[in-house]
Length: 174
Image (tube, rainbow, N blue to C red; front, side, top):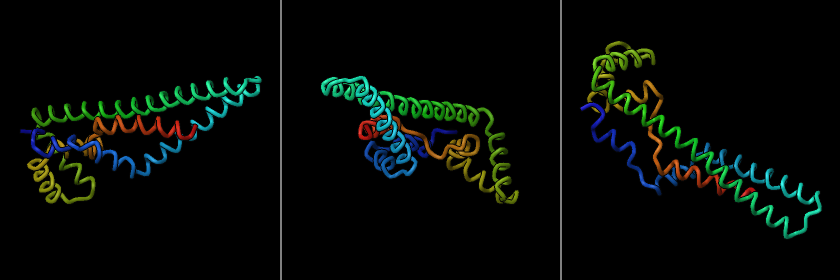
């Protein structure tokens, strides 16, 4: 029953509001928004300065500025969405790979887990006990952490939120 326990399914079962709250509280997200906002400021200002230097009137500046903001928001949001979606897809491939490994080579996965905890500084007996407990409770989560450094899966909501918030940050900067 490797990888099919309740613990593994919970990895992907978070609500949109929960994801939004976590995303809004993450310092790394704030840095990404700051960069998107700076891109909005610099890109839009550069375009408007170019048009102004060419002698454009106010109506032309308004159209050019609006077009620059919309295009920039779509680009910033799309790039961030694409990045997050690619990372999520890689994680899902890792999940399937580890599920397969646990089905076909459970004893090898256990031995690798024991070795992993010994390398982290546990003695052989304690590393074996920890590995055995993890193989009972959540072998998939243990394998994902050990082999891929995955502590939690990126959700669809996070992918969507990262793209939308990046686009909004760009627009606010612009």
